[in-house]
Amino acid sequence: MNVCCSSRASICYWLVASLAAWAVLATIGVFWHPLRATSAVTCLLAMAVGCFANAIKNRTYHCVLTGPLFLIAVILLLSSDLTHVKPVLVWAMVLVGTGIAFLLEWRYSRKLKRAAVSS
Image 1 (cartoon, rainbow, N blue to C red):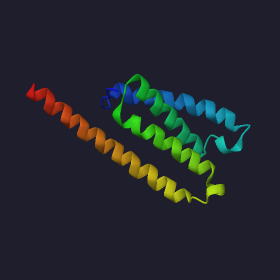
Image 2: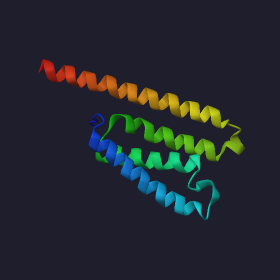
Image 3: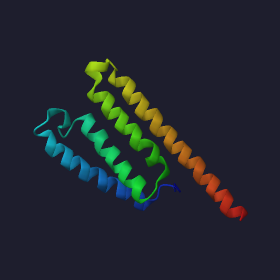
């Protein structure tokens, strides 16, 4: 799979996809409390949907990494009562993982620029 780096268009696409997913999830949240509009689970799940959509349409490097990361975080937060995983650890994983994904994308973009200059 060829991947590329973030652009203004890909960021806008992610935002629109995430907001649309959030609206649908918040509507479901009226009936199922864990997905209420202000829930962290709802926000992370909407962000994951945005990342998956962005990875498919724009092949954005960091979204290939953060989409699954956000989905794992959602699963851990929803099952935290059963697994005894502390939410603070999940949020630390999300923050560190997102930072690493953007760092890897930045390094990848520099490698692409070097390859383009040397060609």
